[in-house]
Length: 238
Length: 238
DNA sequence: CGGTCAATTGATGTAGTTCAAGGTTAGTGG
DNA sequence: CCACTAACCTTGAACTACATCAATTGACCG
Image (tube, rainbow over all chains, first blue to last red; front, side, top):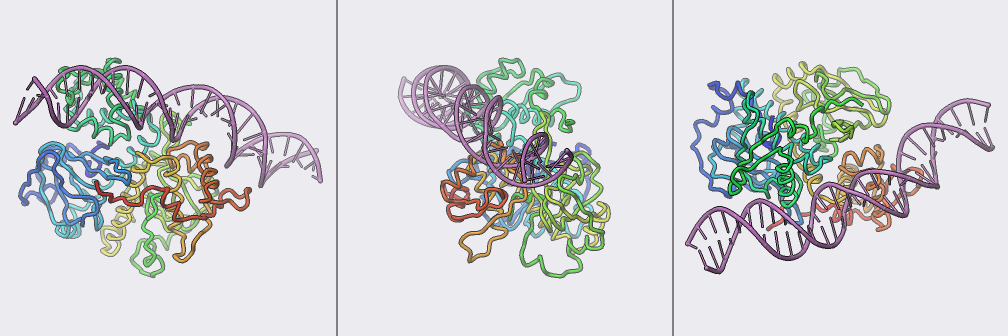
């Protein structure tokens, strides 16, 4: 599961293409699609949490601005993610489109009513909330004690795991977010992210084919990436 | 709400002393009390998550051990907290008593069955999960970009908010955990925690009456503590 | 062609880590 | 009662990973 997609990360491959009338996706299917331009806001931290959203297309970032003006990105959201399953009266963060995006909006009371009345929906919602918690845990571990290289590798590795085809020995990641987004998500500066990327290129772990398209990163050595991520044996013995 | 008590943090004062037959607390009340010695484990990361626990007394820590052997404490749990509401098949962390503690244990399937069948219970469980998420968010912000002093002050401030009587101008915190626990929770070293505590004492924010009892910290200047915590205006404008 | 924005690269600074050395308290056993 | 040990905490000195500040490059675009 992908920690970066912190709100709603249940990417159970089986569930994705199964047509169930009572799944979470179906709940949104009647709602009209809304389009967001890159950089456009969906809602702000502190707003009344009146809606739950499903992402159909594109990538959004969710973040908080702290007192000194710095931004902390707590997650990225992609197609099929749902924003707001574990919310309270007010949004805990702002949400903004990184790329042009499409979402569907559901009034919170409809969502809650559906969850109460629908016995098939509830386990799915519960699973998503659990995924969120697991992702938050992972992110806390990352921020607590990982080095810049480990953070970046963990990040790339999780993105890689989403798109990877088992047989492939390498793959190309199309990262929609900027270096600044990555920095704000990983608790680093833009300069450190940039330096760490070039260091990994020099090690032969990554490559950027066209230096003009820096959002396109090819993973040359996935195994080495996983080692450098440093979460190989989480259940390490003492 | 107290971010440190990361799993189950709904300390709504009103709810605490209301006797409801269908509340979460009542669900555990039939179970026998189990006693844990200081340092004793309740379960380990990776174990099958067969039980949900309610803490009756004492303080526990929940943590993960990462590959290089370091420990990340993701939360502290006190009386009335519940461990495992947002869990999946396996525990995401280990749980261990800091002080001698008392807990009640409920089989996971009983808990799940009760949540499904009981319409009064579900909102309470949901509220607790939401509190967990909010606490996790706060912790991510803390770990992302706060300084050692801000981290320690945030930590003390949240503990203070739990026990404070509105009129009081200062209060004494009885911290059950060691400096090492605090360090592993705040993403710092024990030395930095120690140095930061003495720095705050020199500033007159804190005092330790009896140097022998270092777990007992008196807050001399709560307002200054709040300022130093640095999360005064979270909704700061741009 | 200048202007802007994102990313890179270099030089310097620093907060917090690491390593090392006491100090204090409590428990144990003579 | 006094060693003796083991945790736990504190303090100091040196180091380092990352931040900060500053300059440069490259892509895009009117």
